[in-house]
Length: 169
Image 1 (cartoon, one colour):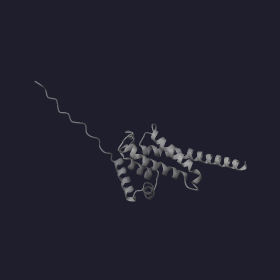
Image 2 (cartoon, helix red, strand yellow; image 1 turned 90 degrees about the horizontal axis):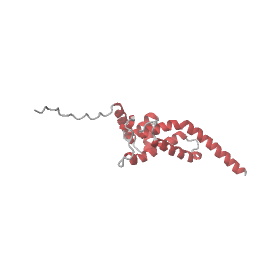
Image 3 (cartoon, one colour; image 1 turned 135 degrees about the horizontal axis):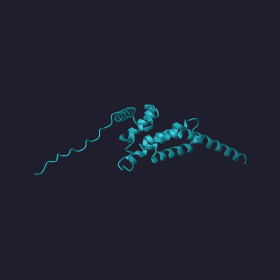
Image 4 (cartoon, one colour; image 1 turned 60 degrees about the vertical axis):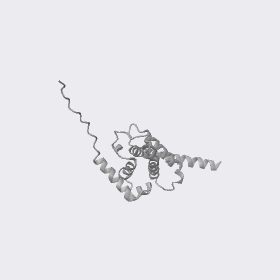
């Protein structure tokens, strides 16, 4: 009986700690997920699903964190899950396209991932490279290309030129 009371108290404390973490971090993590999926903030079902999966993974591993930063752990899972699912969502099958009104829609998924981790989340090049399994030089090139694309977006195609109408006699 005594052991079950301790287990109940421990579980309640764990739940409280996780709820406090989720309440504090979920807003920023949702923004990060929204940037990754290139959805609009008011219509972001893929970002919400990504965040839900990341928070569920963190909750499941909460007792095994042992001093590790839960935000960092959740962000790593969020980024890894996005990277793995990007091929299915945006690759050959092309089921889920980014919202055309999103600023980051002009970037590919990998460029978006590197840019968000590096510039929005402030993750170092070496950490980003290790997280994605890429060389540091590749991460640097992806970030540079993404930044250049955002600063100087590609021009839209010019409207077709119509031949002038000629008067018929």
